[in-house]
Length: 185
Image (cartoon, rainbow, N blue to C red; front, top):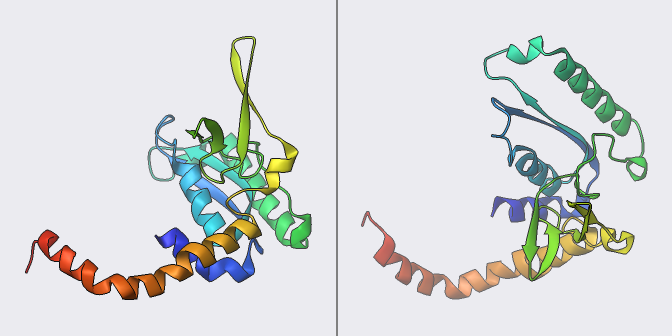
């Protein structure tokens, strides 16, 4: 629900701010949703994600002992500075590539027999070669994703804004039904 509210707030300012994501995990393998969830928050808040990285460190300050992580963090900060120094139409993704060409995440779902990015809904085709699976993307489909201006406008007007009057019409019925679920009366 907070994502829908963010979209309503940022709709007029779609992707006008560059942003970078730093995710932290104590142990490799426990970070599966870290970058996607941070990315979701950034995208729904109107940021264009220009770089992202996940770092692993268990104890306080331990990351400072990892020279490659510190260099990657420096590069991430530089990439954010580079993007902020340019007009937004010149921003590009500067980080390490993910599977999805739009949001650079590696989180995909099968929906109605088709594969799509769980975060931005970019459609993909599955190819199998030499025992490995690869996703391919039709360039025409790259413009059709959850964070496009068209999709944001459709969601805002058909779902978010229209829910207010509907709620007011159904409020009494909702409150009546809610009574049987309330523990404290």
